[in-house]
Image (cartoon, rainbow, N blue to C red; front, side, top):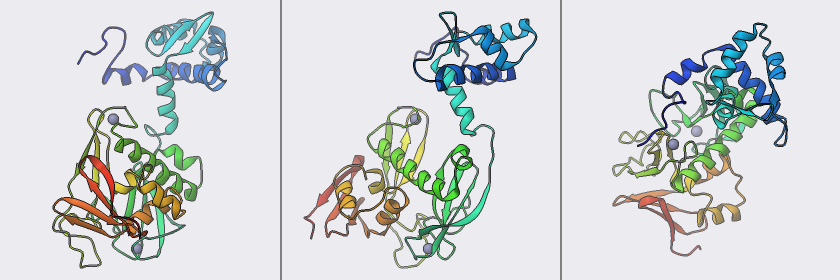
Length: 305
Ligand SMILES: [Zn+2]
Ligand SMILES: [Zn+2]
């Protein structure tokens, strides 16, 4: 693959290049002045940026500003603007994903476990919003998550710090749903690369117990993997959750008035699932049978009751 060479730092060196408070403050100033101020705002002048950054030594300020030009900043008219690379740096820093490590102790939210009906608890740590049931084995057994885990969603610290936990809980599930819907259309929401679908249902699933299957470690045999060939973004999800934006799943959910987000996930997790000869089939509440085929094609097999 041809990569651009010359002006742009790549790989690890870009972090060293940006590891300077003056450079980051210049990007912040330009973002506030030329991006947040609205699409038609003028470029920011040298004196405005310098005043925002508050560096008295003009030689030092000029040195860092000149370094940024061409890589993250562009000269425009009588001043400066941010390149898309510069905007992206500011946005990523604002999500807190690189610096902030909030932990939220698990608390009850107004939602029920789809397995046993108990109220769920929601917490946040290690960049993930974790929903678990205090009274049953939940969805998966893994030493990375506590017992009773029903969902574990990657979510930025900014999404926790800017709102209350109940809102974050709903937003994380809606956001996760949009991400997997996009991936099920074949491309990555993060980098736009091709997505590979892995359908590898558990053929020896133990339906008998109340717990989690010893074979696949899940309560539910019908999960699929969606992975990006370029950036490696990986999501394990319910196949109908990943196809909830298209027919026939969209129509069934709409007819049942199921809210997007947690309610949608919980609803789909309740549909009985059968795995036979590597194919996954769900029994929808309208009496129809939904088949999931290779490549995540979802078809209705038989009319609704
Ligand atoms: Zn439960
Ligand atoms: Zn990607």
